[in-house]
Length: 386
Image (cartoon, rainbow, N blue to C red):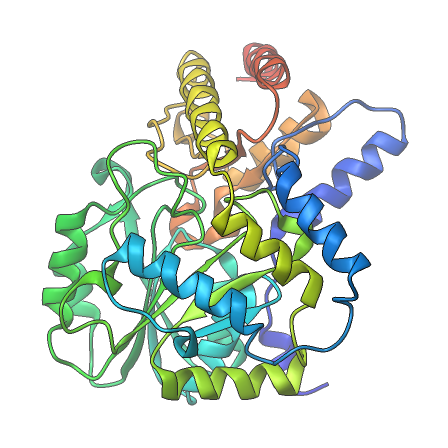
């Protein structure tokens, strides 16, 4: 194996899911709060569009950058929501959101180049930085700032070797949302340096308070930002595997070559469904967002009644990220105990980086009945063991 293979990390959610399913095969009932996937079905109009596309023969290769109709539709959507002009040639459609992370880091980072990324944060950021031989520089998300970051600390981390800064809002795993002023302050801290920004906005439609704001909208950052968004979280299309990046045309050409070399293209029929998702009725998105907010509020209230747990209300996405230092247990130890002894699958905060120690991540993408049952089982376990 190449040396870099040993540097490749993983996404713990899938590992815990496999362990939970193994326990279920043994007859144990598990409440799944580990996987970051909406529990809603893909909207009917989107499914119908995909089925119709299959029947009409959209089953062949398409352009590596995506079907022109979808690229143009995405460009129109981003122009409307971010307030900047975007053309179809600036959009690259990929199978899921992760390829944009993968391709961006492959395209920009040489050995020892530095990448500043949120921590606790999506584990694939750090995994890919280390895989290509870059230096992963974490910026801590601070609980007392509602999991925002200290802009002065960010500024102090920028060096002559900084090539890329990764932002994620709304955030996985914390549910934090970077307010507009923080984004503007981050842009000011970066200034006119030749640094690219990867803005992961995959949860952009799942904001509970206020409106989503992107650094793409900041004057001077249109040319230095690669926006990542997609269909998985917004339209409950995780299994359809479709995301996109928005970037300068010259960068889009590089990303397209990476697509050609790795995936050839994104499935054509899913792209036709994606056009319908963006152009069609949006009530399912609004309903899902409201339901996630209701569930999050109830679940956080319940967690805060359990000894040793302290949780802030998330401002977006569909996660609760409680502080569990009061339990006197390490994150992984507690997550394992809740799975094996309480029958509740969740993730250790340490799975999301060194600053995630002392926390757990629960997905509220489950029914209210199951969330209440999970709270009851966690409470019973805590009463017996803490």
